[in-house]
Amino acid sequence: MLQDVNVLLEQFKAYPWQSDVAIDIAHDFFILGSLLSRKPHNILELGIGSGFVSQMLLAAIRTNRRGTLTSVDSLWDWKGVRPPHFDSIESGGGRIVIEEEESFLVRQDSGRYDFIISDGDHVNMYFFIDKIFRVAKKDAFIFFHDTNNPMFSNLLKIEAIVRKAGHPCYHFKDKSAEGERTDRGLLFVINSGHGKVNAPLHHKLKYKYKKFKKQRKMRRK
Image (cartoon, rainbow, N blue to C red; front, side, top):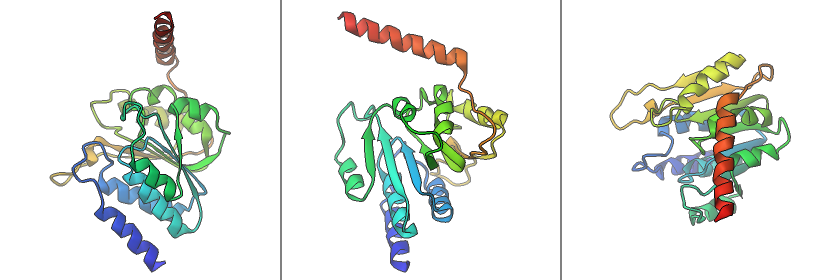
């Protein structure tokens, strides 16, 4: 066990300090502690990014002696090209799925995952948040990143949607030291299994229509 803890600490030595998009290390510690304590069986990561969180989750899974990690990425940030660091995630025991997050969620069974980190599609996730809760098991831990980041106006509304549905949550968004990025927000939610989370219908239809028009235009070319 001590050896596993040392491996986890080594992971934090590799933290991408220069990254402007990675989850802040304070929030990483919270996610890590939650996984070590909750000891989930099925972990879902939406959006891989630098891969640091993926490797952290895999190290925690090895420490827990149980759990599987599925990481979904559309390769939008990589312009459709699979980056080399994805290989190390797979060799470490993670399963990578190259697919749009919404289409992946649609194919999953209800209540499949008991630990979910959403840090992928910052523009459209607002429109399919209901699908994230559908695949979440009762009492699942769910983390939404960048929920206080003014760059993503739709993510600013996630807390209100979750609270309206009656799910317990806490929004981490305070910053106390220079260099921290904790003010970008991390919304921690426990899926109560009772309140239904609804994606805003009128916005969803508008988004679907725009997507349809774009696809139709591409087919005509």
